[in-house]
Image (tube, rainbow, N blue to C red; front, side, top):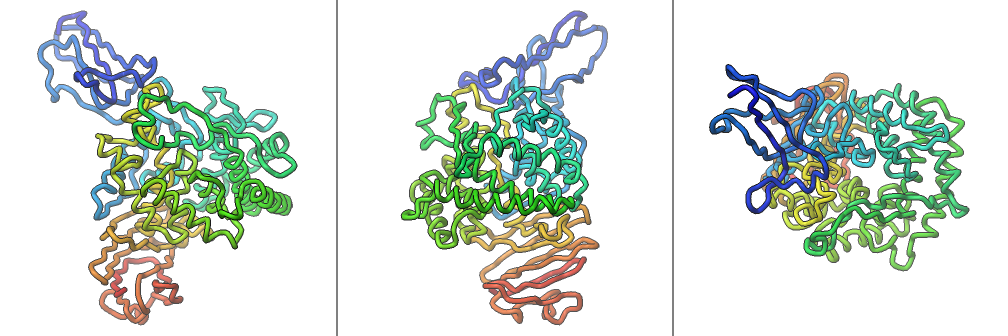
Length: 539
C-alpha cells in the first residue's frame, strides 16, 4: 500500500443484528489496532504488545479488497503442553469440552485471568478455585499455578488479609472466605495432582496467618463467620426473560457460605499441618471445626425439613464438606435432587460458588444420573444452552445472551466449576487417590449412566500416560486402560461377579499381576500395576 496509509482493525466477540461489531460489553477497552504503512513493498505485521479476545474483526483502510487468506489468527497463551484428551458418545459433551479448552488457553497470560477481551483481564481468585483442577487434566499448568501461589502470597498484608485478585492490580481486600480461600484450594489441588509438598511448606505460614485474621475479626460467639462479599456470584435468573437487560453485578453476601468454607478450609489446614510437620496445630483446628459444625447446624439447618434453605448451593456446601448430621444426610440429598428436578425442571441454579462442587456432590451421593442430566441439557440454564446459542467458549453468565452488557463476557471459565474434574474423574475414571497423591495410586471408577455409551480419555500425569477408554453395549462392558510406570491402579469394573471378567480373553482372576480385592456393590475391584489392560465384563 501507499506510504502513510493506515489500516485499522477493530475486534469484538459478537455482532449486532445489523452485522456491525457489538462492543458495549467490552466497557472502555479500545480494542483497536492501527498500522501505518511504510510503502513500497508487501508488509507483514503482527502486534507484539497487545492481544485481543475476539471472534470478529472489522478491517478498514485496507489497500484493495481483503480476503480471509490475508489474515492469520493466533492464540496467545503461556507455553504449556496439552496433556489431556477427552471424547464421549455425547456430541453436546464433546462440544462443551472443546469450548472449555478453547476458553482456558485464551485466559493463560502469565497468570490465570478472567477474560481476554474487555478492560479487565484480571486474575480473580474465585474464578479458578476448583476450575484449576479441571484445567490441570488438559494442560500442563502446574508451574503456572505454583507461581500463582507466590502471587497470592505477595498480596498478603501485614495483618494477614489477602486480596481477591493476585497480583493485586485491583486493591480488593474485601475479606471473604471464598475468593482468598482459593489460595488453599489450589495448593491442595497441586498436591493431589503431583504429590509435591514443598510449596505447602512454603505457604503454610501465610495460610495460617490468613485463617487467624478471618477468625479474629469475623467469627462470632456461635462460631459463624459473619463476613462474606459475593455470595453465590452470578446465580442464574429463574428464567431467561427475568434477567433480560439486567446487570448481573449484584452481590448477595452469605454467612452460610463463608462459614461452610471456613470449616472446609480447617480440614485442609489439618492436612497441611500434618504434611509440614506442624502437628501441634492440628488439635486446635479440629476442636474449632467441631464447634463450627455444631454452630453451623444450629444456625442454618431446619431439622424438620432437613434443609439448609431453598437455594441449591446452600444445601450442596454442607453436604459436600461433611457438615450434615448423619441422621439428616439422606433427606438433604433428596432435597437437593428435588430442587433440581422439581423446582428447576432438571437444571442447575448455582452461581460461581455452588458450581464448583455440584457435579461431584451429586455423583458421590449416588445421583450421577442427575449430574448427567444437568451436564447435557441444551435448555436454559446450562453449558449446553450456551452452545445452542452459538458459544464457542464459556460465558461469564448463564444468561449471557440476554443480560445487560456491562458484565457480560463471552469468554470466561468461572462457570465451569467442577465440570472438567467430573469429566475426567467420574466419567473417564482417572483420579489420583488423595491418600497416595500424584497418581501414585489411581482410582479408576467410571460412572455407568444411561445415555453415555463410551468415553475415551487420556492424561499425561507426572508418572506418565494414563488412559481410560470404555464402552458399553447392552450388558457388556469393554475397558482398555493404561497405567504408567511406578504407579498402580484400583480398577472398579462393572460386573455381577468376579468370574464375569476377562483380561485379554483370560479370566481376570488368573492373570499374573492382577489382584482381585473385593466385590463392592455392582463392581469388582482389582489392583493392577503399570501396563496396558483390556478388560471385558458382563453386568
